[in-house]
Image (cartoon, rainbow, N blue to C red; front, top):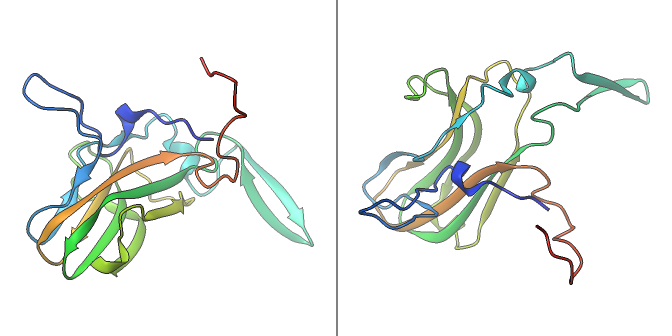
Length: 178
């Protein structure tokens, strides 16, 4: 079971004096690049997402060394849930990007789901990928959606979490979580 902080969701925007709370980010508009309204400051765990770290453990299986890491970042996954099906033509490309600056200048693409036709994104469609071990991680992370045509509908919720594809959907009935 994954518990996530909605305040840290890539698309969540809290209620203000003049707006309502928004839980998803939109790609409605002309063809172009849409950056999620929120970003993660990966400063506290960024070092653990590099290729190797002091927290690595070597698991040897059949003479092959496999590295597993038990520190921060272990098993984290990017999840993009399409709340509203996009309406339009062309393709949609979902990417997790990272940048050294909070303004997300000159970003590096870490995860790229590839350009897919709009018809591949029905409501409820989930894109999921493990965060890769890489020396390209920078301090700030966010989601970028690239569209090649005008969209009249389409919204998503995107977040990072653990156990997002677990078969255990929750706890037994009758127990409250406080």
